[in-house]
Image (tube, rainbow over all chains, first blue to last red; front, top):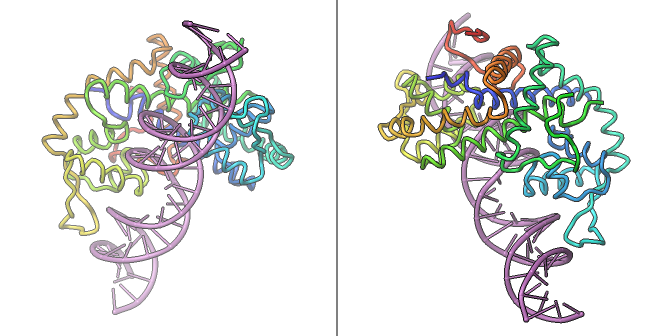
Length: 161
Length: 161
DNA sequence: ACTGATGATTAGTATACAAATCAATTCCGG
DNA sequence: CCGGAATTGATTTGTATACTAATCATCAGT
């Protein structure tokens, strides 16, 4: 029987813990307490202003309940605006604030550094291959997850640029 | 700037979500509601009977606070025994019950199946390389995580058997 | 005996999910 | 075109990780 610590499921949990810890360390050193999930949400809202919470949840693969909490906290920090959509009064339209945009650009170098550091155990070729395989594994199993990602229509999910 | 969805940190979160979902689906179909983390704890206790919570936490890379909760739930389900260690009355000695052992063997095929399914997007060679790189990345950054794994003494952390 | 370290727990915060609920929209038969 | 049914966006509740920080009990070393 394969040892626990050699199983992909266990390794996935470990790598995620490391990724989160590195993100907090780097972004924290840059003077922000933004979490990886909050960063993902804010970056996506910045890229696609005016999207609603359900669409955001699809883009970054949260479920709707998690999205509500994440957006609550970002709104409380003054990083985004949440408004009722006039065309569909169920939906909440999201927009980044000036403060949010400024924070994003201020921590961008730290976010990039975190990506390098979390792959520090791999050389450059290995890191590239690792990311390729991770992308392919995720794309191949996207609909097995309980909050599957829903990309922009027409986007190539498993492209291997 | 690299797209969010191509960053290792984001992909790590996605792959972890998928791994957890697949585990729940397979183990659930086998008639158990054991979580991935509970499984890891129980399997480790089964392998190393009589270890205490701090040692367990080191083996599977939880922090102590998380361990308390996980052990609470496993004890409530009757899958393990938690007793004060006579030699060090701070420590709680953990032992799997007959019921726990029986559950472990009953769900073992589902756990193995989950490992294969979560790598379903990769062919066999890619899956092997992916696990190798995942192991190497985790080993290389173990001490960056906030709850670093502490293996059995003498164990080769980054061996690539 | 005093000091520092360690095992465990508790409180508090942030994901992540399921399930239930409410409001608003869309769909479809007539 | 109308009206009920099904669907969808958002929220709430409840459970389970995962951490930090603080606390308590106990142990180790001097």
